[in-house]
Amino acid sequence: MALSGRRPGGPEVRAADGPSAQEPVRAEPAPRLGVGGARLGPRPRRRADPRRRAPLPPALGGGRRPRPRAPGGRDVEPGARPAQAGRRAVRPAPAARAAAPSPPPISGHQDTLDGIRAVAALAVLVYHVASSAGAIVDPDGAGWLYNGGQVGVPVFFTLSGLLLYRPWAAAVLDGRAAPKAGEYFRKRALRILPAYWAVVIGYMLTAGRGHIGDPLTWGSLLTLTQTYLPDPWWRSGLGPPHLGQAWSLVIEVAWYATLPLTAAVLGWYARRVPTQDVGVRAKRLLYGIGVYAALSLPYTVAMFVPDRHARMGLWLPQYFAWFAIGMALAVVTVWARLDERRPVAALCRAVADSWAACWAAAAMLYVVASTPVTGPVSLQTPDVFWTSLFDLVVKGLCAAALVAPVALAPAGHPALGAILGNPVMRFLGRISYGLFLWQTLIIVGWYETADRGIQGDVLTNLPLMAAASIAAATLSHYLVERPVRRLVQHRDRSRRDRARTRARPS
Image 1 (spheres, rainbow, N blue to C red):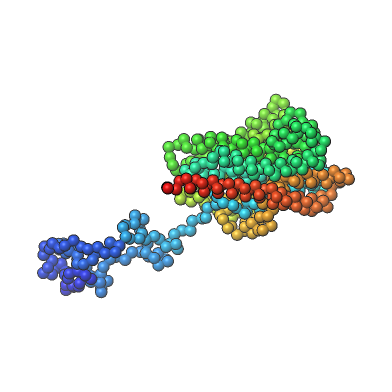
Image 2: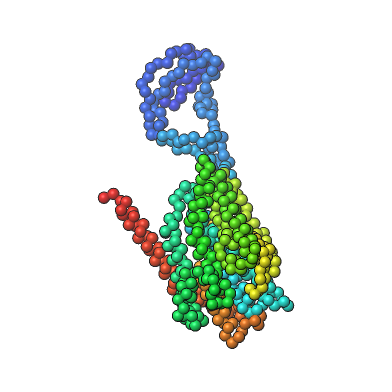
């Protein structure tokens, strides 16, 4: 039985055994096209193949073959095709696609990293209070645990490596413009020097009045070069007692100064392969950063062979490894944002979700770092090669275990946001630089007054010292740091506005 039917807008269609099966195709005018390329009017008939079965009419299920559907109900095409003129490409429904892990952010402000800064600054504060009180060297108690507060320094170095190297890593992997060295140096100077100069002036007008007329003291302190002086008047190589914590700031500034050159060398090495593959370049960056970190080992050897040179332990090469931890995290975060296959993003999310295990490991490493395994608890006791090496490794691993889950977490991670991104931690993170700068001047001055030192009363004095240091840091933030930052932002906006005005056609 032959079935026949009529297509909408077209001539009658008969089965292959109908009388019109062998009729030649009649010449018809070119079809008209409507909106989106739809064909209007009748279609030309084609010469039928006797072996081909006639299509069913629409009423009986004829027409186009149905496409597979996703669970969400939208049509899914088997392959991605370029969108044709006037036709929207059909993409899989969100429910049909596997949920890709959210990569970590690589730009903008991260509140959780502010929380890490607060933890580091408070750890250093506790260490300085315990050291001034003499609790660290007390053999009868658990005061030796306070010695682990020094891990705040590698945490600061790791954060610097992460945040400052990340734009250069993005330039290598994403092809965007690298930071301009002049602009970078200007921003670093305006971020570091004004608040630090305020502390130096405060010290010279109070505890340092006896050297207020010494130009060498002024010059070395204001330029952050005090640890390079061969024969200073202060007893230890760290600097004046009330500014002893600034030795690590000297190392930070030295690293700032060398970062553009270091980034250029790493970028040159990563680009030597003839490929644009993000994964290949990222791995080469990580290899280069590994070599950079390993340079700390021969430098540590040179500190003790053939003779011991204690002052070398206050210079930058000893701490390449701690900065390299942050630099490696910077590469991984950028890689996770750019790699479409997203295996690195999955790794980042796994580390972030394992934050409790990572922090438990950091706590155990903190305990190890508090012991003489990482060096003597007193500055008067000479250090040796193996303890210096263990100090570098153990404290570096502790910083990595603390920072990595936060650096690799996606934006809005609930647990980390609740712990480190709450208002209290965000505030302490914002004032952490001032907290680091002012604490030693306040703590040493307090213990020198009425000979309060070497009494072991840490828990009695710690709340008072913390409150005074936080108050001074708050004043520094609102009176010095924030006005300077707003001035920098205003100048940057004005410069961008002028550039857009010049680029606008007249």
